[in-house]
Length: 173
Picture 1 (cartoon, helix red, strand yellow):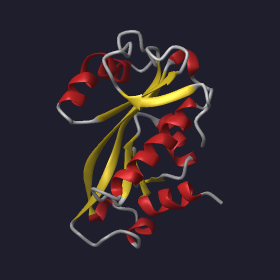
Picture 2: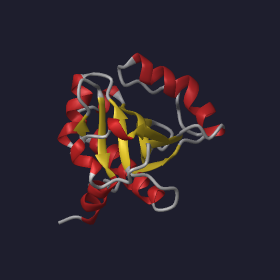
Picture 3: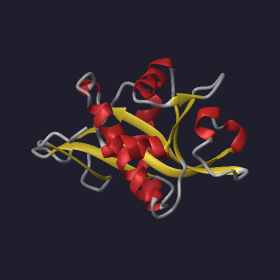
Picture 4: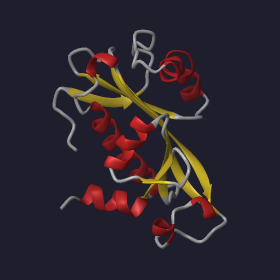
């Protein structure tokens, strides 16, 4: 998915209005308003902000990325054939993804997800990552990720997307 010409996705910076952001999910709002800056400074998470070029301080949405690992047994059978057979499988976690309440329903979540997948794929070439992992907050979020090709782990809100699948998605038709 191409980024609209009037939008930009950049790393969280001091000029972004964190206090003014609300997506309607208290835990995601609180994280962004109070913790995201510390996580960036401590290199605990990469935090990326979607903003309009006309008003770059106003945050329209954000996502976070960090390294993680999954136990081999937690990887769905369909994905196991394309990953190394180590006890722990390297992965990239999309820890949070949120869109401002007044901009929901405009495919900005899909825009943020596409950018996160591109970043994760680029990082995997340097650091190594066999898949993308998300922990959905609720069934609606899980459905969003399933609609974008993620595989749901049994009896869980955790979903995965093999990096080979991301590679194919980014290569296009």
